[in-house]
Image (cartoon, one colour):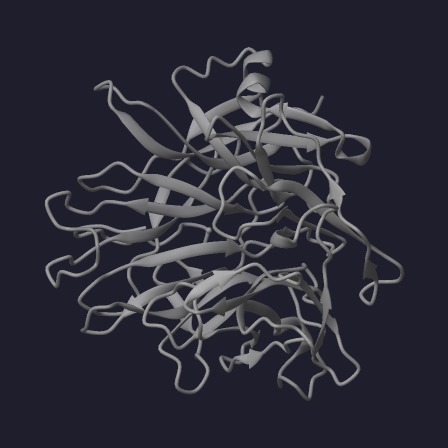
Length: 432
């Protein structure tokens, strides 16, 4: 949801998915995740388990004297995924790197999401001896222990974006006990990098323990030609993602960018478009609640625009998992905002996090209450709970615990040398 020189990967004492209990009477807090050892301090938090006990993200520990544009064979290390235990757990607060699964001229690993039970982490890692760099989809079960997922035939790169707790697919699809199967979603691409917003990217899913990707169907009549699967519900029954179109080498807006894939009659998945907010040309999906009933994102006109989006959520109705999604609910924004986006979401969709943009600066926000009508600036809320935020600026909320009270994201602040550093953060803030 990543890097460095000579990092030794420590085995987790308890391993991914092990039981961790929150300490009683955990007070409100706002803390940084830290970063992995290296020359450049930089980290970000991507995903957390519903109980708020495990956070995954990335850290940068590259040599600042080596170009970071990926065109130099001497750039030996870059991003590295990590796991971090936040305050109020019964385990020490530590940050542990996932390492680099494959050899290559450029080393990078990216942890995108952790399964609700904490047993698996989805992401990707670089491989190969040539620049430009190529990526393989990866599913980790602990730091240093991983399963390489295949790409579609003839594809150079791919990534795993999310992983469920289980899979709904029939036993004939993937042999083995039903409880051992999970749905992993992402994309496979002909491109020589892991960019999904480029021609050649195909939304796919894997049914673990199978490593074979299955393309998700494009709906008939759509002009989109590429895309990604971005998230999956806890039970593996609902997948969300985005589809794109290129015209003359430029990515353009389509009226059917945001999609849901539901179980189909044939045993696979069938697509359903998510309509944009009123007055917008298209919608964009960022996340999905564990129960699959709430999808977060935004509405937009210009796919490359910034700060002009409309934050929104789509709610499913009817019997799951075949429920439909109506028009999106537009979320309120902070005073003075030009735009925003809904990103992280609690297990049942009752609390949503994201960002609002004011004067081209992003502000981490949380929506809650009936109709998600209550919006808070996370930094202001921390102050209300007698937390001194110091010099922190919080960019956005990428993940929320099941109860909506633990938030993660990325921001910046002054370090002990009075220099700005970018760092992942976690906060526990009781709901209003």
